[in-house]
Image (tube, rainbow, N blue to C red; front, side):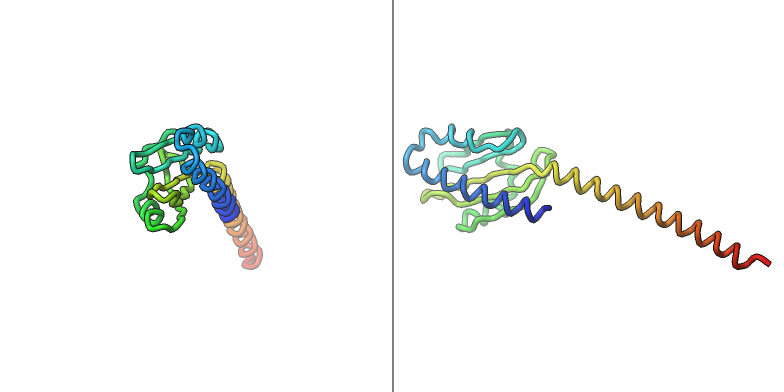
Length: 150
């Protein structure tokens, strides 16, 4: 599930980067409107590091929450992704270099649904393990009493 989410997020981010690159070349004034349109939901965030500063869209996050290693890879011309918590919400961050001026496009996709699914599955597995262990102890005690009865 996580791998599928990472693949779809990477593909979506690649499409969004192309749109931002086109806007940087054609109409940098309409960039804020484009970023607002690219936000995929109430918990997603888009950040664009420009030489003049940061532009943000979607759920407000401080650029300082984006890990430095993620930004460093993008500064060196390599698209990168990393999971981390932004404002208490688990996210998958994708950072991509964009434009010729050293700008970096960062998109943060929430992983709340996956987090809930993994927590449910882990609770289910722990409960199943405890029930199986108790059943095994009960069955073993019953078999031992029966086998050792005079």
